[in-house]
Length: 633
Image 1 (cartoon, rainbow, N blue to C red):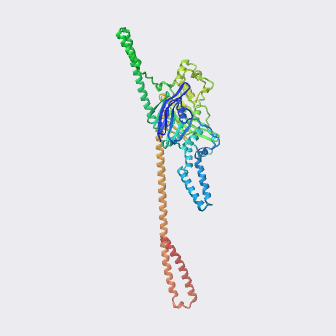
Image 2 (image 1 turned 180 degrees about the vertical axis):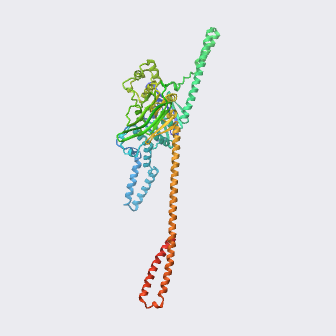
Image 3 (image 1 turned 30 degrees about the horizontal axis):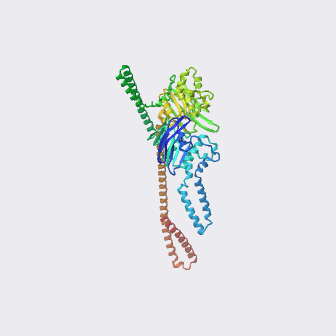
């Protein structure tokens, strides 16, 4: 056990948030804390980090166990670049590296005992440096920053210039680099694109410490956690498994509790009817029997009615009329901001009844495309054609369709004046706005609350083509599930942008992957898309291997041909040299015979000529011998 929460309770005034929360986490274990918005998940993390004080209970942390924490909202940094901010985590190691370099320089001028002492000190420092992975920390920083979506040309940007989401990514990078024994993460995927989320999944899955995650990203949780702690109605329940196991088991438990409650209610009703009948007989024995049954009934421990998930928010999306088969055609769509080309020559063709998810990395222009389709932004070029009888309902993640000065009630009433007050209240209650909450002004709402108001308006629009931009942002898991069910049962057409892979998996029938090279279409849900990505990657790697093998084969063949040609030339040269050597040796023998003739004994001119010819022949022969030896080797 590295960390445990024992009977943690917390209240704000008379509102109880947490009541007797109990769980523990072992070394290397990955745990998720789930629950609706306001259930107390973030409060619990703050209590663990001692940023808030529990009313009762205690947090027990193992001896010498370090704990790191990523909050949802980050403090601002001002004086460092992105790279420097992460490097500051390794400041002790950097200082040690500087000391090692300084000692290396100093040792050049030392000798004798001073040099011996310096070498001992140097050896100890190098051992510490190597133990702390000193040679790897720079590549670790680079790997984490790239994994979290920063490019190398971002590394030297001042952190003070970054957006809130980018600062959160820097904080996450610092935390991962520090490698504490227990990592606490509060919504770590909120500001990451799909590639970065997948990278973080791999990093955390292989992390050798324990991890506690608060997240609404169910796909992310499915891939990482092995234990789920659910906080519901201030209480905690532990499930041993990933998110999918938890979701299935939770429904089984709730159904079992609901059946037990209904059976008890039926038995209570039956006993009350029997008691009433016995009293009606108005006999001494019947009255005594009735009183006895009443005592037994009063002793029964009454079960609370379980709250069914789908009682909280019912969402029905019904098109007013059916559109034609052709819903949306986009051709050659291009958009730039100054010299920056966001996308060019984009096309898509959406048919009636399709549920299409537009995905891609941050900055590729997904939201811009939706805004251009809804005429909220001008296009540079291209054509957008809506089909016959197409009525658009648009959900904007920035909630620009809401009016800040209006109340929630007026927002719906002014948009749909024909609706009765009762109908408006019923709709808002379906989106968790009850009582005086409906009179809150839009400007005072949280992002999640504004999202629910926008969805309520959308539900009433009766549109047959829904265009949604990050509809699950700020929704808790329960609300996401209800929205998923509504969209799966929707008979109109759906186009949306989302980073929520679980949501995409549940609702999409087609994936459009937007990248710098254009849009690629995949018929199927997110799992199918990933499968095709893996197949494509495998094929690409196979192709690269084949190309590499072919290249290597061609290279080997060419090299072999060159070697063979070289060898043949050497053999020919060797043969020519041998022939020339034989010619010279014969020539030298003839010259020696000529010199020995008596008639040339007194002929100085002739002897001089023969001597010169012998010298030339011997000189050439000596050279050929050297060449022959070299070629022979």
